[in-house]
Image 1 (spheres, rainbow, N blue to C red):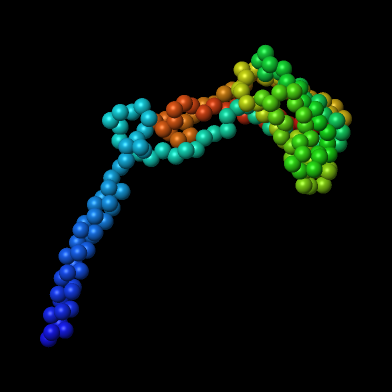
Image 2: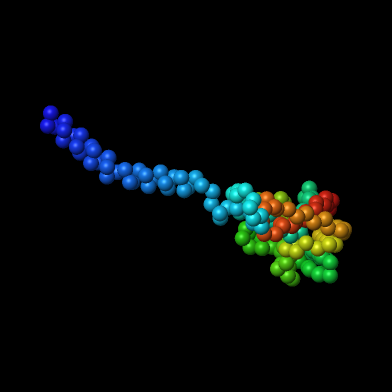
Length: 182
């Protein structure tokens, strides 16, 4: 009987000591479940709060160069983007991976290379990329077996990757594809 009274006495004391901790844990859970002001959409005072992701799009202009094969040899790229003129040159087969094979006169333009770890006859130039989107573009590529030119008005697309209420400005890009027959 004495052991039973001691057990219930200790149990009551423990219950009394842990009651504030249980209440505190319940308050913390309630606070976590409540929406936070830090996830409210930008610029919409009084709007229903919602979570915003931190995604973004790849901005700039990309011209995808599609060819069934790329002959080995010297290539010269000339890009006229509005009033800006860029030039790049390089060779196929590509240099070893991690070593650029194309050199351009400005960091605003880049020629993407593909296949450095593959056999030399699979090496190619994948695309022409500009950091800024021009209104008009002319891309001329001269290679060991011929040349091609792509020109036209650029169609820019802008959007809000995280939702219009989340992004401070639109994300804009332009993508085009060309088929090259060497």
